[in-house]
Image (cartoon, rainbow, N blue to C red):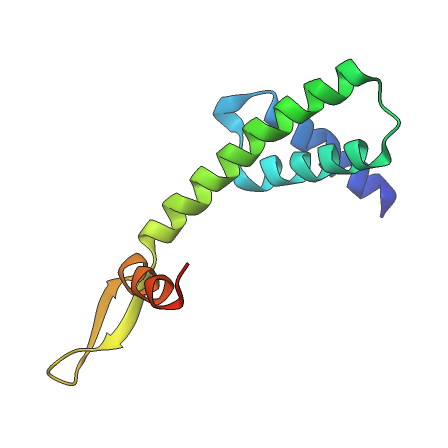
Length: 102
């Protein structure tokens, strides 16, 4: 299993270095690696800062992918005529977030 994790880590790092091939999964895997290395606390300052910057960019990328996916989601609700209708999930979730004070 460790060999598989090492291979996945290498693939994620390679994909993270090639923006045209970056996927959400690769970015998330690389971000997890960065967090683990930073959490270990044994890096020189310059390397830690470099990794922090890379992690920040990967986090922004992942957030943009998730925001885009959220915009494509639809929910089925009961329409005024009693029949189901599809509405953008963001419309419903936005109303719910507003009700809870978030």
